[in-house]
Image (cartoon, rainbow, N blue to C red; front, side):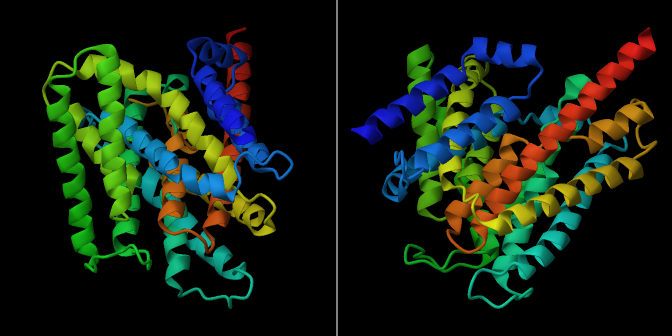
Length: 399
């Protein structure tokens, strides 16, 4: 009964956390959503796992793993439905190089530094080995998360360009996660098929396209609010479950499905967008509760990896900002540098890491979770400091 009432409390808290009044209150306080509610629900997950409370113990977490997979599938579909091909076509000259610099430099730096750090802090009883496939896989996972950004475009000039850059960074993250899941297959009893990496890659794309076609066909008849809500959740759950059964990334499969649904013609776009906006916040918060319960903050190696990840990511973003100076004429130099260099981690970066942990449980993945969660907090604090300083500078300049 304690577990049942505890889960009901967490469900109610997630619903209230997505209420528009809560969002307006956070905006009024000047807090970002990741730093306010997101961190709070991660802490709630930690407390729920605490032995004194014992709501989310190992047995309950095993039973709730489909819920986490559903949450990851919903996050993938949310981001995929935002991806508009017209944004890519409207990318100005030099924009492709800008996106390449803002993704590849942080990716390369984080992969290199985190691989060295993971080799140095090998798991207990394991000899340090830089050539191990798990080290490369985990470093690639960290690099993929580092390339992603939650760009507060309203703070900078050229907000449309920053929105395009952010969407293409998301595409890079999805591609990175898809490659990891295809070429680093889990060696488990449930993996019935033995296929080369390229075949798993094509299977991932094909499954996402098929799921998108199914969702698109179902949406043609679901027009009412409750019916559309049930159909949306049901089809996303089906896509995420199919991906999980094949040991593929639920985030990637549902992202492809969402992008396909978003770019096909139809009269459902506005209603579905409104429905997804209502679903997104509670589902993300519930997923963060489970993330907090899976987190192992008592392992010092994760805290050691955190500044390595956050520092290498920021250095890569800063170098990308310097290298892209003068690349685009529509952005002032200062605004361009700040918009590229000072960017917090978004929900998709956390989803990439958690999805990797679901695919490959054990090993150094708990350290990766600690590094990304802690790195997200560090970058949020730094971005908040820079934004407050820039607002103070704007006020002093105007006076």
